[in-house]
Length: 400
Picture: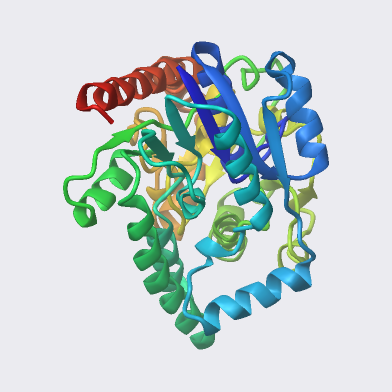
């Protein structure tokens, strides 16, 4: 098929969870179909993508996006005053012009959009449209509202949740097929979008890149990785440092946590000490994961599924997580992961694994097996291809 794939963010090498999913879905789809790319991004993003996809020639179009912080702040204020959700904040005229030029010059069998926000852009009628979702945005905002303590922030989050739900559901009602990362997200959308065709395409991991390493683990060490200016990640680590880690230190006085990821806030950096290392951006997260005995995921808010859990498992690490941290992934508590939703239970699970090498090894081995069998991007790519071909056949048979 000839497919136009539109992206709200695209870069190589992909660093954040969102960019990893978008890149790998593109990479896998390109193995089966003739793909044309259009994306928001910077000149550096375009150069890196063109270098990776050399064989696509000129069929890559980037619309420049990268407004100064003060412009984005003004946009946010405007959205609040106009009672619009933040889904519209990245909409640009240049991106619409890019879509218009591509549709004028070429004909496509299918349009794949990496985010519901791209449904704000006009496109010709009659072309089947598949739209991916990385999570249920309004659910993420609802969870954030539930955990907020500042009264002003609670009001803002509650209002944004309401606006987000209204706009997200309106957008997600439009495409012929909606993709989600988990059965839970699918069920949330099905509750409000009666009759909508929804399929699950899970998040995945590059099992060749994130693979077990022969490195000496540091005794009583933990690691967490993720982009740290993403609210759920920062919230998780501040919660861990303030509420969970003191309980761990009572049991294991020399315990250490390494927090790896770009853009940590001052609030997080100020919590650094002899036991808490905040690295900031690193070129390669794998050595940090490899040296830790335990990978921790103390998330309390968030949506979709966590690629960090898949990457840790692919590297052969034992994982202690909240239920939300491994939500939507086929890990079983006590078999391939230890789940704990209170500070006391989390600290007990960590201390237990520090003392039990055999248990760590068994958890890691079983989680690794699950990832290789069900969550490698190659496996997911084959599943996605089947879904795309199915929706295209349905459109042809219906005369669309």
